[in-house]
Image (cartoon, rainbow, N blue to C red; front, side):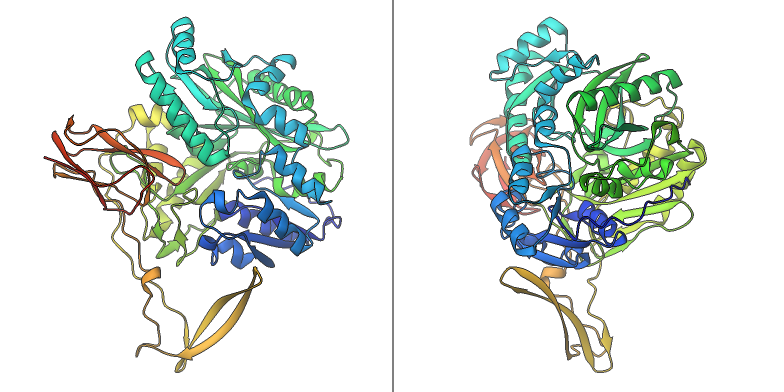
Length: 596
Protein backbone atom coordinates (compact mmCIF):
# COMPACT_ATOMS: atom_id res chain seq x y z
CA UNK A 1 0.00 0.00 0.00
CA UNK A 2 1.30 3.51 -0.73
CA UNK A 3 2.48 5.62 2.14
CA UNK A 4 2.20 9.38 2.50
CA UNK A 5 3.98 11.10 5.38
CA UNK A 6 1.56 13.20 7.40
CA UNK A 7 2.17 16.82 8.24
CA UNK A 8 2.41 17.88 11.90
CA UNK A 9 -0.89 17.69 13.79
CA UNK A 10 -3.24 20.59 13.10
CA UNK A 11 -3.77 22.89 16.06
CA UNK A 12 -6.23 25.40 14.63
CA UNK A 13 -9.36 23.49 15.67
CA UNK A 14 -9.84 22.59 19.30
CA UNK A 15 -13.18 20.84 18.83
CA UNK A 16 -15.04 19.62 15.75
CA UNK A 17 -18.76 18.89 15.86
CA UNK A 18 -19.66 16.04 13.49
CA UNK A 19 -23.13 16.79 12.10
CA UNK A 20 -23.88 13.28 10.88
CA UNK A 21 -24.27 9.68 11.98
CA UNK A 22 -23.22 6.13 11.08
CA UNK A 23 -19.93 5.13 9.52
CA UNK A 24 -19.02 8.58 8.17
CA UNK A 25 -19.40 10.10 11.64
CA UNK A 26 -17.19 7.32 13.02
CA UNK A 27 -14.64 7.98 10.26
CA UNK A 28 -14.44 11.70 11.05
CA UNK A 29 -14.33 11.14 14.81
CA UNK A 30 -11.37 8.79 14.38
CA UNK A 31 -9.54 11.30 12.19
CA UNK A 32 -10.10 14.02 14.79
CA UNK A 33 -8.73 11.82 17.56
CA UNK A 34 -5.61 11.03 15.51
CA UNK A 35 -5.03 14.76 15.00
CA UNK A 36 -5.52 15.61 18.66
CA UNK A 37 -8.86 17.34 18.04
CA UNK A 38 -11.84 16.85 20.37
CA UNK A 39 -14.82 15.32 18.53
CA UNK A 40 -18.40 16.15 19.47
CA UNK A 41 -21.23 14.02 18.09
CA UNK A 42 -24.92 14.74 17.63
CA UNK A 43 -27.64 12.11 17.81
CA UNK A 44 -31.36 11.59 17.44
CA UNK A 45 -33.56 9.85 19.97
CA UNK A 46 -33.28 6.79 17.72
CA UNK A 47 -29.46 6.92 17.86
CA UNK A 48 -28.92 7.37 21.59
CA UNK A 49 -26.66 4.34 21.88
CA UNK A 50 -25.18 4.44 18.37
CA UNK A 51 -21.55 3.67 17.66
CA UNK A 52 -20.66 7.23 16.66
CA UNK A 53 -22.08 8.46 19.96
CA UNK A 54 -20.05 5.93 21.93
CA UNK A 55 -16.79 6.88 20.21
CA UNK A 56 -17.13 10.66 20.43
CA UNK A 57 -15.61 12.70 23.24
CA UNK A 58 -18.94 14.45 23.73
CA UNK A 59 -22.45 13.96 22.35
CA UNK A 60 -25.50 16.20 22.13
CA UNK A 61 -29.12 15.21 21.61
CA UNK A 62 -31.07 16.60 18.64
CA UNK A 63 -34.35 14.90 19.56
CA UNK A 64 -36.74 13.20 17.16
CA UNK A 65 -36.27 10.03 15.16
CA UNK A 66 -36.71 10.67 11.45
CA UNK A 67 -34.01 12.75 9.75
CA UNK A 68 -36.38 15.70 9.32
CA UNK A 69 -36.88 15.73 13.10
CA UNK A 70 -33.19 15.46 13.96
CA UNK A 71 -30.22 15.52 11.58
CA UNK A 72 -32.02 17.86 9.17
CA UNK A 73 -32.90 20.43 11.83
CA UNK A 74 -30.59 23.41 11.48
CA UNK A 75 -31.81 24.95 14.73
CA UNK A 76 -31.04 21.80 16.72
CA UNK A 77 -27.54 21.49 15.26
CA UNK A 78 -26.81 25.19 15.79
CA UNK A 79 -27.89 24.77 19.41
CA UNK A 80 -25.49 21.83 19.73
CA UNK A 81 -22.70 23.98 18.28
CA UNK A 82 -23.35 26.66 20.86
CA UNK A 83 -23.51 24.24 23.77
CA UNK A 84 -20.45 22.28 22.72
CA UNK A 85 -18.24 25.28 22.03
CA UNK A 86 -17.05 23.63 18.81
CA UNK A 87 -15.03 25.83 16.49
CA UNK A 88 -15.65 23.73 13.35
CA UNK A 89 -18.39 21.51 11.93
CA UNK A 90 -17.87 18.51 9.64
CA UNK A 91 -21.09 17.60 7.78
CA UNK A 92 -20.01 14.15 6.54
CA UNK A 93 -22.06 13.19 3.48
CA UNK A 94 -25.81 13.21 2.98
CA UNK A 95 -28.01 15.30 5.26
CA UNK A 96 -26.64 18.89 5.27
CA UNK A 97 -23.32 18.21 3.54
CA UNK A 98 -24.41 19.95 0.33
CA UNK A 99 -26.71 22.57 1.82
CA UNK A 100 -25.51 26.15 1.36
CA UNK A 101 -27.98 27.55 3.88
CA UNK A 102 -26.62 25.20 6.54
CA UNK A 103 -23.04 26.21 5.73
CA UNK A 104 -24.04 29.85 6.16
CA UNK A 105 -25.82 29.09 9.42
CA UNK A 106 -22.62 27.47 10.72
CA UNK A 107 -20.52 30.44 9.63
CA UNK A 108 -23.00 32.82 11.29
CA UNK A 109 -22.02 31.22 14.61
CA UNK A 110 -18.40 32.17 14.01
CA UNK A 111 -17.64 28.50 13.35
CA UNK A 112 -15.77 26.96 10.39
CA UNK A 113 -17.71 24.77 7.99
CA UNK A 114 -15.42 21.92 6.89
CA UNK A 115 -16.42 21.99 3.26
CA UNK A 116 -16.60 24.31 0.28
CA UNK A 117 -17.86 27.91 0.33
CA UNK A 118 -21.67 28.25 0.26
CA UNK A 119 -21.44 29.86 -3.18
CA UNK A 120 -19.73 26.76 -4.61
CA UNK A 121 -22.29 24.51 -2.94
CA UNK A 122 -25.09 26.53 -4.53
CA UNK A 123 -23.60 26.33 -8.00
CA UNK A 124 -22.71 22.63 -7.85
CA UNK A 125 -25.41 21.51 -5.44
CA UNK A 126 -28.01 22.64 -7.96
CA UNK A 127 -27.33 20.14 -10.74
CA UNK A 128 -28.93 22.51 -13.24
CA UNK A 129 -26.55 25.41 -12.61
CA UNK A 130 -23.73 22.85 -12.31
CA UNK A 131 -24.28 21.83 -15.94
CA UNK A 132 -23.97 25.46 -16.97
CA UNK A 133 -20.78 25.80 -14.92
CA UNK A 134 -19.26 22.75 -16.61
CA UNK A 135 -20.00 24.18 -20.03
CA UNK A 136 -18.35 27.47 -19.06
CA UNK A 137 -15.29 25.48 -17.92
CA UNK A 138 -15.11 23.82 -21.33
CA UNK A 139 -16.29 20.40 -20.11
CA UNK A 140 -19.00 18.63 -22.11
CA UNK A 141 -21.96 17.46 -19.99
CA UNK A 142 -24.32 14.58 -20.57
CA UNK A 143 -26.96 15.73 -23.10
CA UNK A 144 -29.81 17.20 -21.09
CA UNK A 145 -31.71 20.32 -20.17
CA UNK A 146 -31.11 23.03 -17.59
CA UNK A 147 -34.80 23.85 -17.29
CA UNK A 148 -36.41 22.57 -14.07
CA UNK A 149 -39.13 19.99 -14.61
CA UNK A 150 -42.53 21.38 -13.69
CA UNK A 151 -44.65 19.07 -15.83
CA UNK A 152 -44.22 15.44 -16.97
CA UNK A 153 -44.94 16.69 -20.50
CA UNK A 154 -41.43 18.17 -20.52
CA UNK A 155 -39.99 14.70 -20.03
CA UNK A 156 -42.16 13.29 -22.80
CA UNK A 157 -41.06 16.05 -25.19
CA UNK A 158 -37.37 15.60 -24.31
CA UNK A 159 -37.52 11.84 -24.81
CA UNK A 160 -39.27 12.22 -28.14
CA UNK A 161 -36.65 14.72 -29.31
CA UNK A 162 -33.46 13.16 -27.94
CA UNK A 163 -34.38 9.49 -27.55
CA UNK A 164 -35.26 7.18 -24.68
CA UNK A 165 -34.49 6.42 -21.91
CA UNK A 166 -34.39 9.68 -19.96
CA UNK A 167 -33.08 10.12 -16.43
CA UNK A 168 -35.20 12.32 -14.15
CA UNK A 169 -32.95 13.49 -11.29
CA UNK A 170 -33.12 15.52 -8.10
CA UNK A 171 -31.51 18.92 -8.73
CA UNK A 172 -30.20 18.99 -5.15
CA UNK A 173 -29.56 15.27 -4.84
CA UNK A 174 -26.99 12.61 -5.39
CA UNK A 175 -26.22 8.97 -4.65
CA UNK A 176 -29.13 7.76 -6.78
CA UNK A 177 -31.74 9.27 -4.45
CA UNK A 178 -34.53 11.02 -6.28
CA UNK A 179 -33.50 9.51 -9.63
CA UNK A 180 -35.87 7.64 -11.94
CA UNK A 181 -35.29 6.25 -15.40
CA UNK A 182 -38.15 6.85 -17.85
CA UNK A 183 -38.16 4.46 -20.81
CA UNK A 184 -41.31 5.65 -22.55
CA UNK A 185 -43.82 8.50 -22.41
CA UNK A 186 -46.34 6.51 -20.39
CA UNK A 187 -43.90 6.31 -17.45
CA UNK A 188 -43.16 10.04 -17.21
CA UNK A 189 -45.86 11.18 -14.79
CA UNK A 190 -45.30 8.42 -12.23
CA UNK A 191 -41.50 8.83 -12.43
CA UNK A 192 -41.66 12.58 -11.83
CA UNK A 193 -44.01 12.14 -8.88
CA UNK A 194 -41.85 9.45 -7.29
CA UNK A 195 -38.58 11.33 -7.85
CA UNK A 196 -40.04 14.44 -6.22
CA UNK A 197 -41.14 12.47 -3.16
CA UNK A 198 -37.73 10.83 -2.71
CA UNK A 199 -35.85 14.08 -3.28
CA UNK A 200 -37.96 15.92 -0.73
CA UNK A 201 -37.60 13.15 1.84
CA UNK A 202 -33.83 12.86 1.53
CA UNK A 203 -32.64 16.34 0.55
CA UNK A 204 -35.45 18.61 1.71
CA UNK A 205 -36.05 19.97 -1.83
CA UNK A 206 -37.97 18.45 -4.72
CA UNK A 207 -36.69 20.30 -7.80
CA UNK A 208 -35.91 17.99 -10.73
CA UNK A 209 -34.05 18.11 -14.04
CA UNK A 210 -33.45 15.56 -16.79
CA UNK A 211 -30.77 14.23 -19.08
CA UNK A 212 -30.20 11.43 -21.55
CA UNK A 213 -29.67 8.07 -19.86
CA UNK A 214 -26.97 5.77 -21.22
CA UNK A 215 -27.75 2.08 -20.76
CA UNK A 216 -24.21 0.80 -21.30
CA UNK A 217 -22.06 3.53 -19.77
CA UNK A 218 -19.56 3.31 -16.93
CA UNK A 219 -19.67 5.64 -13.95
CA UNK A 220 -16.21 7.15 -13.42
CA UNK A 221 -15.37 9.92 -10.98
CA UNK A 222 -12.37 12.04 -10.06
CA UNK A 223 -11.38 13.05 -6.52
CA UNK A 224 -10.26 16.68 -6.27
CA UNK A 225 -8.72 18.71 -3.44
CA UNK A 226 -8.43 22.48 -3.38
CA UNK A 227 -7.26 24.96 -0.77
CA UNK A 228 -8.01 28.64 -0.13
CA UNK A 229 -4.67 29.63 -1.67
CA UNK A 230 -5.55 28.69 -5.24
CA UNK A 231 -3.98 25.22 -5.29
CA UNK A 232 -5.88 22.40 -7.02
CA UNK A 233 -5.01 18.72 -7.44
CA UNK A 234 -6.82 15.58 -8.46
CA UNK A 235 -6.11 12.17 -6.95
CA UNK A 236 -7.01 9.90 -9.82
CA UNK A 237 -10.22 8.13 -10.74
CA UNK A 238 -12.71 5.69 -9.26
CA UNK A 239 -15.02 3.35 -11.15
CA UNK A 240 -18.46 3.02 -9.54
CA UNK A 241 -20.32 1.15 -12.27
CA UNK A 242 -21.55 -1.81 -10.19
CA UNK A 243 -24.89 -0.34 -9.07
CA UNK A 244 -28.47 -1.23 -8.30
CA UNK A 245 -31.30 1.29 -8.17
CA UNK A 246 -28.68 3.81 -9.34
CA UNK A 247 -26.85 3.35 -6.05
CA UNK A 248 -23.32 2.03 -5.88
CA UNK A 249 -22.49 -1.44 -4.57
CA UNK A 250 -18.78 -1.76 -5.38
CA UNK A 251 -16.19 0.91 -6.22
CA UNK A 252 -12.57 0.66 -7.25
CA UNK A 253 -9.58 2.92 -7.83
CA UNK A 254 -8.23 3.63 -10.32
CA UNK A 255 -10.83 3.14 -13.07
CA UNK A 256 -9.60 0.14 -15.10
CA UNK A 257 -9.07 -0.31 -18.83
CA UNK A 258 -9.34 3.34 -19.86
CA UNK A 259 -6.69 4.90 -22.05
CA UNK A 260 -4.18 6.86 -19.91
CA UNK A 261 -4.72 9.90 -22.09
CA UNK A 262 -8.46 9.80 -21.38
CA UNK A 263 -7.81 9.42 -17.65
CA UNK A 264 -5.49 12.43 -17.70
CA UNK A 265 -8.10 14.45 -19.58
CA UNK A 266 -10.73 13.49 -16.98
CA UNK A 267 -8.45 14.72 -14.20
CA UNK A 268 -7.84 18.01 -15.97
CA UNK A 269 -11.56 18.43 -16.66
CA UNK A 270 -12.38 17.79 -12.99
CA UNK A 271 -9.90 20.43 -11.85
CA UNK A 272 -11.29 22.87 -14.44
CA UNK A 273 -14.83 22.37 -13.11
CA UNK A 274 -13.67 22.85 -9.50
CA UNK A 275 -11.60 25.92 -10.33
CA UNK A 276 -14.48 27.39 -12.31
CA UNK A 277 -16.74 27.54 -9.26
CA UNK A 278 -14.08 28.68 -6.78
CA UNK A 279 -14.11 25.32 -5.03
CA UNK A 280 -12.26 24.74 -1.75
CA UNK A 281 -11.86 21.45 0.21
CA UNK A 282 -12.55 17.89 -0.99
CA UNK A 283 -15.00 17.25 -3.80
CA UNK A 284 -15.79 14.73 -6.51
CA UNK A 285 -16.49 15.32 -10.18
CA UNK A 286 -18.49 12.53 -11.79
CA UNK A 287 -18.47 11.47 -15.43
CA UNK A 288 -20.18 8.94 -17.66
CA UNK A 289 -17.74 7.02 -19.85
CA UNK A 290 -19.02 5.38 -23.04
CA UNK A 291 -17.42 4.44 -26.35
CA UNK A 292 -14.09 6.02 -25.44
CA UNK A 293 -15.59 9.42 -24.56
CA UNK A 294 -16.57 10.95 -21.23
CA UNK A 295 -19.30 13.39 -20.28
CA UNK A 296 -19.63 15.54 -17.18
CA UNK A 297 -22.42 14.24 -14.94
CA UNK A 298 -22.30 16.25 -11.69
CA UNK A 299 -20.05 17.47 -8.90
CA UNK A 300 -20.56 16.31 -5.33
CA UNK A 301 -19.48 19.09 -2.99
CA UNK A 302 -18.54 16.77 -0.15
CA UNK A 303 -16.60 13.68 0.77
CA UNK A 304 -17.80 10.56 -1.04
CA UNK A 305 -18.77 7.24 0.53
CA UNK A 306 -16.11 5.59 -1.63
CA UNK A 307 -13.24 7.89 -0.61
CA UNK A 308 -11.29 5.03 1.08
CA UNK A 309 -10.27 3.47 -2.24
CA UNK A 310 -8.56 6.72 -3.22
CA UNK A 311 -6.84 6.80 0.15
CA UNK A 312 -5.62 3.24 -0.33
CA UNK A 313 -3.96 3.88 -3.72
CA UNK A 314 -2.55 7.33 -2.93
CA UNK A 315 -1.70 7.12 0.77
CA UNK A 316 -3.54 10.43 1.34
CA UNK A 317 -5.91 10.74 4.33
CA UNK A 318 -8.73 12.74 2.77
CA UNK A 319 -10.48 13.59 6.04
CA UNK A 320 -7.22 14.90 7.47
CA UNK A 321 -6.79 17.01 4.34
CA UNK A 322 -10.32 18.36 4.76
CA UNK A 323 -9.56 19.54 8.28
CA UNK A 324 -6.23 21.07 7.27
CA UNK A 325 -7.69 22.95 4.31
CA UNK A 326 -10.60 24.21 6.42
CA UNK A 327 -8.08 25.42 9.00
CA UNK A 328 -6.45 27.56 6.31
CA UNK A 329 -3.40 25.45 5.56
CA UNK A 330 -2.14 25.28 1.96
CA UNK A 331 -2.09 21.87 0.34
CA UNK A 332 1.15 20.05 0.93
CA UNK A 333 0.36 17.98 -2.18
CA UNK A 334 1.35 18.76 -5.76
CA UNK A 335 -0.03 17.14 -8.88
CA UNK A 336 3.37 15.80 -9.88
CA UNK A 337 3.84 14.33 -6.40
CA UNK A 338 0.65 12.26 -6.46
CA UNK A 339 1.23 8.68 -7.60
CA UNK A 340 -1.28 5.84 -7.81
CA UNK A 341 -0.10 2.46 -6.55
CA UNK A 342 -1.97 -0.76 -7.18
CA UNK A 343 -5.74 -1.22 -7.06
CA UNK A 344 -8.25 -0.80 -4.24
CA UNK A 345 -11.80 -2.16 -4.10
CA UNK A 346 -14.56 -1.11 -1.73
CA UNK A 347 -17.65 -3.21 -1.03
CA UNK A 348 -20.64 -1.53 0.56
CA UNK A 349 -22.26 -3.86 3.07
CA UNK A 350 -25.86 -2.68 3.28
CA UNK A 351 -28.66 -4.04 5.43
CA UNK A 352 -30.63 -5.24 2.43
CA UNK A 353 -31.87 -8.64 1.31
CA UNK A 354 -30.54 -9.20 -2.24
CA UNK A 355 -32.25 -12.59 -2.68
CA UNK A 356 -33.85 -12.73 -6.10
CA UNK A 357 -32.36 -9.34 -6.93
CA UNK A 358 -34.88 -7.46 -4.79
CA UNK A 359 -32.39 -5.65 -2.51
CA UNK A 360 -35.13 -4.99 0.03
CA UNK A 361 -34.07 -2.84 3.01
CA UNK A 362 -33.72 -4.98 6.14
CA UNK A 363 -33.65 -2.92 9.34
CA UNK A 364 -33.21 -4.67 12.65
CA UNK A 365 -30.80 -5.68 15.40
CA UNK A 366 -27.27 -6.65 14.39
CA UNK A 367 -26.73 -9.67 16.63
CA UNK A 368 -23.25 -10.51 15.35
CA UNK A 369 -20.67 -8.54 13.35
CA UNK A 370 -17.18 -9.86 12.63
CA UNK A 371 -15.46 -7.92 9.84
CA UNK A 372 -12.55 -9.49 8.00
CA UNK A 373 -8.97 -8.84 8.98
CA UNK A 374 -5.68 -9.46 7.24
CA UNK A 375 -3.12 -7.79 5.02
CA UNK A 376 -4.32 -4.69 3.13
CA UNK A 377 -7.86 -5.14 4.52
CA UNK A 378 -9.85 -2.29 6.06
CA UNK A 379 -13.32 -2.02 7.60
CA UNK A 380 -15.07 1.35 7.93
CA UNK A 381 -18.19 0.57 9.95
CA UNK A 382 -20.95 2.42 11.73
CA UNK A 383 -22.33 -0.52 13.72
CA UNK A 384 -21.19 -3.18 16.13
CA UNK A 385 -22.95 -6.28 17.45
CA UNK A 386 -25.92 -5.17 19.54
CA UNK A 387 -26.61 -2.05 17.46
CA UNK A 388 -29.88 -1.49 15.65
CA UNK A 389 -30.12 -0.59 11.95
CA UNK A 390 -32.97 1.89 11.97
CA UNK A 391 -35.52 2.18 9.15
CA UNK A 392 -35.30 5.96 9.49
CA UNK A 393 -31.84 6.28 7.94
CA UNK A 394 -29.54 4.94 5.26
CA UNK A 395 -28.88 1.22 5.69
CA UNK A 396 -25.09 1.16 5.14
CA UNK A 397 -23.65 -1.11 7.84
CA UNK A 398 -20.05 -0.64 6.78
CA UNK A 399 -17.52 -0.69 3.97
CA UNK A 400 -15.02 -3.44 3.34
CA UNK A 401 -11.95 -2.03 1.57
CA UNK A 402 -8.95 -3.95 0.25
CA UNK A 403 -5.77 -3.14 -1.68
CA UNK A 404 -3.74 -5.25 -4.10
CA UNK A 405 -0.68 -4.54 -6.19
CA UNK A 406 -2.85 -5.23 -9.25
CA UNK A 407 -6.58 -5.57 -9.95
CA UNK A 408 -6.67 -9.37 -10.02
CA UNK A 409 -5.05 -9.55 -6.58
CA UNK A 410 -7.45 -6.93 -5.24
CA UNK A 411 -10.47 -8.90 -6.51
CA UNK A 412 -9.16 -12.10 -4.92
CA UNK A 413 -8.46 -10.33 -1.65
CA UNK A 414 -11.95 -8.78 -1.64
CA UNK A 415 -13.54 -12.20 -2.15
CA UNK A 416 -11.45 -13.67 0.67
CA UNK A 417 -12.38 -10.80 2.98
CA UNK A 418 -16.08 -11.11 2.15
CA UNK A 419 -15.93 -14.81 2.96
CA UNK A 420 -14.53 -13.94 6.41
CA UNK A 421 -16.97 -11.11 7.13
CA UNK A 422 -19.93 -12.27 9.19
CA UNK A 423 -23.07 -10.26 9.93
CA UNK A 424 -26.12 -11.79 11.64
CA UNK A 425 -29.51 -10.45 12.62
CA UNK A 426 -30.11 -8.55 9.39
CA UNK A 427 -29.80 -9.56 5.77
CA UNK A 428 -26.86 -7.95 3.94
CA UNK A 429 -25.56 -7.47 0.41
CA UNK A 430 -22.46 -9.61 1.03
CA UNK A 431 -23.77 -12.45 -1.16
CA UNK A 432 -24.52 -10.07 -4.01
CA UNK A 433 -21.04 -8.56 -3.74
CA UNK A 434 -19.48 -12.01 -3.95
CA UNK A 435 -21.51 -12.76 -7.08
CA UNK A 436 -20.40 -9.49 -8.67
CA UNK A 437 -16.70 -9.87 -7.90
CA UNK A 438 -16.60 -13.51 -9.00
CA UNK A 439 -18.30 -12.84 -12.34
CA UNK A 440 -16.09 -12.97 -15.45
CA UNK A 441 -17.70 -9.79 -16.78
CA UNK A 442 -16.41 -7.86 -13.76
CA UNK A 443 -12.94 -9.33 -14.15
CA UNK A 444 -12.98 -8.35 -17.83
CA UNK A 445 -14.38 -4.85 -17.08
CA UNK A 446 -17.33 -5.69 -19.32
CA UNK A 447 -19.86 -4.24 -16.88
CA UNK A 448 -21.80 -0.97 -16.87
CA UNK A 449 -24.23 0.89 -14.61
CA UNK A 450 -27.07 -1.39 -15.79
CA UNK A 451 -25.09 -4.62 -15.64
CA UNK A 452 -26.06 -5.74 -12.12
CA UNK A 453 -29.78 -5.41 -12.75
CA UNK A 454 -29.80 -6.73 -16.31
CA UNK A 455 -27.18 -9.48 -16.38
CA UNK A 456 -26.74 -10.94 -12.91
CA UNK A 457 -29.01 -13.65 -11.54
CA UNK A 458 -29.39 -13.52 -7.77
CA UNK A 459 -32.01 -16.28 -7.66
CA UNK A 460 -29.56 -18.66 -5.98
CA UNK A 461 -28.77 -16.29 -3.12
CA UNK A 462 -30.15 -17.49 0.23
CA UNK A 463 -33.12 -15.86 1.88
CA UNK A 464 -32.65 -13.51 4.82
CA UNK A 465 -30.81 -15.03 7.80
CA UNK A 466 -32.35 -16.58 10.86
CA UNK A 467 -32.49 -14.59 14.06
CA UNK A 468 -29.36 -14.52 16.10
CA UNK A 469 -29.18 -14.51 19.84
CA UNK A 470 -28.96 -11.26 21.70
CA UNK A 471 -25.78 -10.42 23.57
CA UNK A 472 -26.05 -9.90 27.28
CA UNK A 473 -24.00 -7.66 29.51
CA UNK A 474 -20.63 -8.86 30.71
CA UNK A 475 -20.46 -10.38 34.15
CA UNK A 476 -17.95 -10.31 36.96
CA UNK A 477 -18.55 -12.65 39.92
CA UNK A 478 -22.13 -12.40 41.09
CA UNK A 479 -22.71 -8.92 39.63
CA UNK A 480 -23.20 -7.75 36.06
CA UNK A 481 -21.42 -4.71 34.68
CA UNK A 482 -23.44 -2.28 32.54
CA UNK A 483 -22.49 0.84 30.64
CA UNK A 484 -25.53 3.10 30.98
CA UNK A 485 -26.07 6.16 28.80
CA UNK A 486 -27.39 9.07 30.82
CA UNK A 487 -28.54 12.33 29.33
CA UNK A 488 -28.40 15.58 31.28
CA UNK A 489 -29.88 18.65 29.63
CA UNK A 490 -29.38 17.11 26.20
CA UNK A 491 -25.72 16.14 26.70
CA UNK A 492 -24.81 12.47 26.81
CA UNK A 493 -22.74 10.83 29.56
CA UNK A 494 -21.68 7.20 30.08
CA UNK A 495 -22.20 5.80 33.57
CA UNK A 496 -20.91 2.46 34.90
CA UNK A 497 -23.43 0.38 36.84
CA UNK A 498 -23.27 -3.07 38.50
CA UNK A 499 -26.39 -5.11 39.25
CA UNK A 500 -27.01 -8.65 40.56
CA UNK A 501 -26.75 -11.22 37.81
CA UNK A 502 -30.05 -12.36 36.36
CA UNK A 503 -29.17 -15.90 35.27
CA UNK A 504 -26.99 -18.67 36.58
CA UNK A 505 -24.48 -18.21 33.76
CA UNK A 506 -23.83 -14.61 34.79
CA UNK A 507 -25.45 -13.01 31.78
CA UNK A 508 -28.64 -11.07 31.36
CA UNK A 509 -31.48 -12.06 29.15
CA UNK A 510 -31.66 -9.69 26.20
CA UNK A 511 -34.53 -7.25 26.49
CA UNK A 512 -37.29 -7.20 23.91
CA UNK A 513 -35.83 -4.06 22.37
CA UNK A 514 -32.53 -5.90 21.72
CA UNK A 515 -34.01 -9.01 20.17
CA UNK A 516 -33.74 -9.26 16.45
CA UNK A 517 -36.35 -7.32 14.52
CA UNK A 518 -38.46 -9.33 12.16
CA UNK A 519 -36.76 -9.69 8.79
CA UNK A 520 -38.28 -9.38 5.32
CA UNK A 521 -41.23 -11.61 4.59
CA UNK A 522 -42.40 -12.70 1.16
CA UNK A 523 -44.49 -10.41 -1.01
CA UNK A 524 -47.43 -12.73 -1.01
CA UNK A 525 -46.10 -15.91 -2.58
CA UNK A 526 -49.56 -16.80 -3.93
CA UNK A 527 -51.34 -16.07 -0.65
CA UNK A 528 -54.34 -13.77 -0.51
CA UNK A 529 -52.72 -11.34 1.91
CA UNK A 530 -50.39 -8.63 0.62
CA UNK A 531 -47.75 -7.98 3.27
CA UNK A 532 -44.88 -5.52 3.57
CA UNK A 533 -41.36 -6.90 3.95
CA UNK A 534 -40.05 -4.20 6.28
CA UNK A 535 -40.94 -1.31 8.55
CA UNK A 536 -41.82 1.89 6.72
CA UNK A 537 -44.51 4.34 5.71
CA UNK A 538 -47.22 3.89 3.09
CA UNK A 539 -46.84 6.86 0.77
CA UNK A 540 -49.13 5.82 -2.07
CA UNK A 541 -51.95 3.35 -2.75
CA UNK A 542 -52.07 2.18 -6.34
CA UNK A 543 -55.32 0.19 -6.21
CA UNK A 544 -58.70 0.34 -4.51
CA UNK A 545 -61.26 -2.16 -3.26
CA UNK A 546 -62.84 -3.93 -6.20
CA UNK A 547 -59.90 -3.45 -8.58
CA UNK A 548 -58.62 -6.43 -10.54
CA UNK A 549 -54.88 -7.07 -10.13
CA UNK A 550 -52.35 -9.44 -11.66
CA UNK A 551 -49.72 -11.38 -9.72
CA UNK A 552 -46.69 -9.14 -9.34
CA UNK A 553 -48.65 -5.93 -9.89
CA UNK A 554 -47.73 -3.14 -7.42
CA UNK A 555 -50.58 -2.27 -5.06
CA UNK A 556 -48.81 0.29 -2.83
CA UNK A 557 -45.58 2.23 -2.44
CA UNK A 558 -43.67 1.85 0.82
CA UNK A 559 -41.01 4.37 1.86
CA UNK A 560 -38.28 2.80 3.98
CA UNK A 561 -34.76 4.02 4.63
CA UNK A 562 -35.42 6.97 2.30
CA UNK A 563 -36.16 4.68 -0.63
CA UNK A 564 -39.44 3.88 -2.33
CA UNK A 565 -40.39 0.22 -2.71
CA UNK A 566 -43.30 -1.16 -4.71
CA UNK A 567 -45.33 -3.71 -2.76
CA UNK A 568 -46.81 -6.23 -5.17
CA UNK A 569 -49.71 -8.65 -5.08
CA UNK A 570 -48.69 -12.27 -4.73
CA UNK A 571 -51.63 -13.56 -6.80
CA UNK A 572 -54.11 -12.43 -9.41
CA UNK A 573 -57.62 -11.58 -8.30
CA UNK A 574 -59.83 -8.85 -6.93
CA UNK A 575 -58.81 -6.45 -4.16
CA UNK A 576 -61.19 -7.32 -1.32
CA UNK A 577 -59.68 -5.15 1.44
CA UNK A 578 -57.31 -2.22 1.85
CA UNK A 579 -56.15 -2.14 5.48
CA UNK A 580 -53.97 0.97 5.39
CA UNK A 581 -54.14 4.55 4.25
CA UNK A 582 -51.48 6.92 2.95
CA UNK A 583 -49.25 8.04 5.81
CA UNK A 584 -49.69 4.90 7.90
CA UNK A 585 -46.59 3.38 9.51
CA UNK A 586 -46.31 -0.39 9.08
CA UNK A 587 -44.00 -3.10 10.35
CA UNK A 588 -42.40 -6.04 8.59
CA UNK A 589 -45.00 -8.72 7.90
CA UNK A 590 -48.02 -6.42 8.30
CA UNK A 591 -50.92 -7.07 5.92
CA UNK A 592 -51.88 -4.01 3.91
CA UNK A 593 -54.38 -5.56 1.51
CA UNK A 594 -56.26 -8.76 0.73
CA UNK A 595 -56.68 -10.15 -2.78
CA UNK A 596 -59.29 -12.83 -3.46
